[in-house]
Amino acid sequence: MKSAYEIAMERLAQAGGGTKKLSEEQRARIADIEKRYEARIAETRVSHEGQAAAAAPEERAEILARMAEGIRNLEETRDREKNAVWEEA
Image (cartoon, rainbow, N blue to C red; front, top):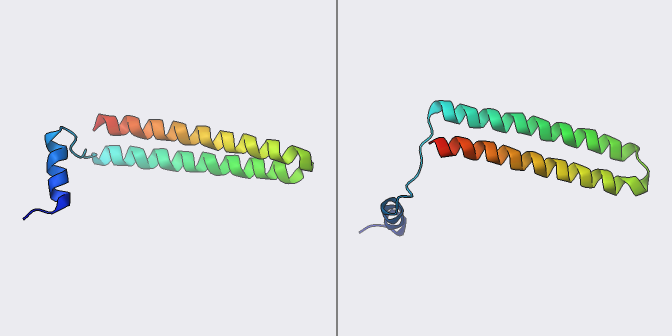
């Protein structure tokens, strides 16, 4: 008797949505993308948090909002790059 997982995987494969396998080169590219964007996000945090610490209280919220927007943009770009690699698989 098959488990629910096995049945679901069979149905997924029949629908043409089987799991994709990445090559070693693609895995390395995704790891590089992760590393690059992790560093850029950390750099953005350090920069903006330093500015916020030195800023007047009324400017802090604006600086932190810019930081959040910058991080969100970096994360979206990172995800697009990773998805492009996955689409090659």
